[in-house]
Length: 280
Image (cartoon, rainbow, N blue to C red; front, side):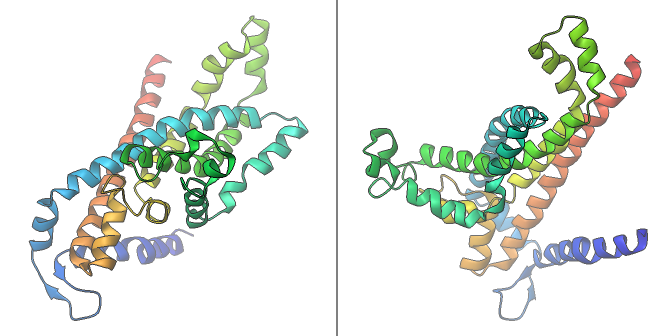
């Protein structure tokens, strides 16, 4: 069983990565001949003043969306883990965003937030008639909101499964000792979901590096470069400017950043295990 899995991983994981790494040292417009370029692409990308800005916006969206998604997903996951039938029905309705494509969601929100023809203008609500996608700070907030709206159901599903794995005897013992629901949540639920939180956070953090279609349709990186993340920067260099070499450099940077963040989060989980063993 290991050999087929290894072959698939090499074919669809390692080979494309090696290809992108090789392309980062070449000059190619996507159609013509590929010629060696040495480190010219790396020098041009790393010296581009737009790269730190795109990196900052990427981390900004990553951190803020994590801060929004994690507590809400955790609370919703705990709520949906209940055995009541109405909660199961709510869960089915609530998971609908998972069935929608990012492009469709972006088009819908773009229409709803249009200051002239959107929801605010139709309902005569002044707060909603702001130019949400025309101001940098508001556009960033909209991106974080839409990303959270789309992916909170997925992470709630993860937390729901994690909560259902917690032995009910722990809650029964806590109730006998007089612990209320809030105390049980912070003393039992959250500690028991430590690895679930690590897994969910890894998916959020690494997944946020790949946000492209939603931002491309919603803001196209604007206004200005307010929402220009690294993945969008890579697309614009590669498929709009036909600079596959610099685009490959950004792709390699995204892989390295994602790998480093995943290892850090995994390390955090491992450190917690070690500390527990020491405490035991």
